[in-house]
Amino acid sequence: MKNTKTLKLVFTALFAAIICAGCFIRIPLGIVPIVLQNALCILTGILMGSFMAAAPTALFLLAGIIGLPVFAGGSSGLAVLLGPTGGFYPGYLLGAFVAGIIAGKPSLSEKKVSASSIIRISIAMLTGMVILYVPGVIRFASWAVGNGKIPEDKTTFAYTMAACVIPYLPGDALKILISVPVALKVRPILAQYLYSQNDGKRNDE
Image (cartoon, rainbow, N blue to C red; front, side):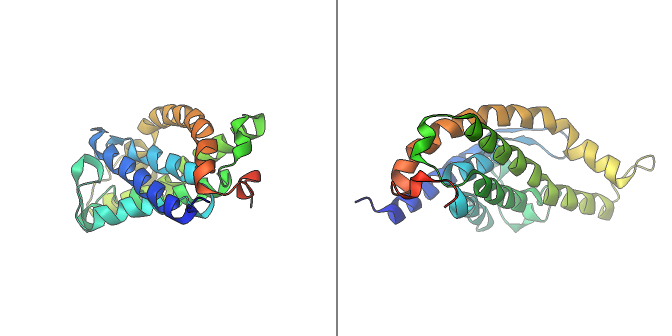
């Protein structure tokens, strides 16, 4: 019999390491850079599924907070969370958790891809990517107002949308298009290791 608890810890650490490795993929674009870590957090949440979804992201955040250079661009520490982009990191955690809840536990039955599974995983990925923006936008707007960054000819909302949302939507759409088929392929494989066959029969258990 597989030791599922041990395997869950192993995969949590593995996926956290993958998220951490994503810190090296960073494209500067104004104050907020283009990163891969946001999609990796949501994707790993969907792969783990259910209440284990946020575990890899939580481990990644803990590593960054204690000083390991795993945040975007190799940064680390609480100072990053207090900066203009700091709100996105708790957004990663929340987005991964919600996406995993929507996706449900990986199931052996998902080896046969169905329209319902495609829709469910697509909704999970999209929802997670949207949710991560909420605390990120709130923190960025607060930082911009507090530091006098808002131009006189723009509202806080308009400036924030232009600075950390609108330019990133095409890239996020591409990340979703790539992540969904990856999730559909990998989830039934993980189901063999993370859950028993009885657990894998249904996604909502």
